[in-house]
Length: 93
Image 1 (cartoon, rainbow, N blue to C red):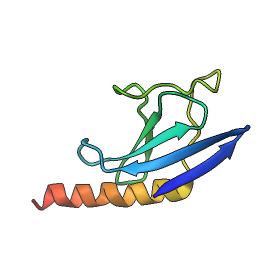
Image 2: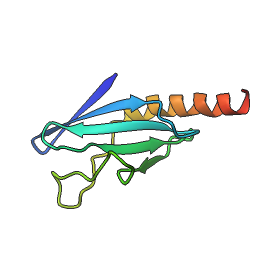
Image 3: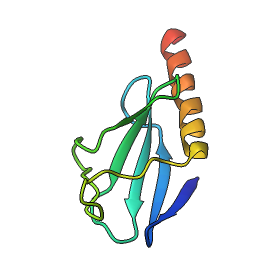
Image 4: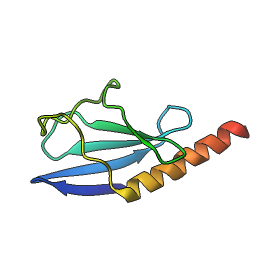
């Protein structure tokens, strides 16, 4: 499922991803105008960590500060559910 955010004339698309990281879910963000996408990691407690320094991701070229807009709350909530399930699976293999 994709989540869309429109901000300052740009459209940002957020997609959830299971990811290879243990105990976290990914939210990948892309823009209608930017090349590389950004990455957020969501922990089981719902905390959000920007991770655009990972290979294949980068800063937001549409903003001077390079920061990607925070994902919509629905995306964070759904990613948290994924992270919680990954956490439970790790405890009960």
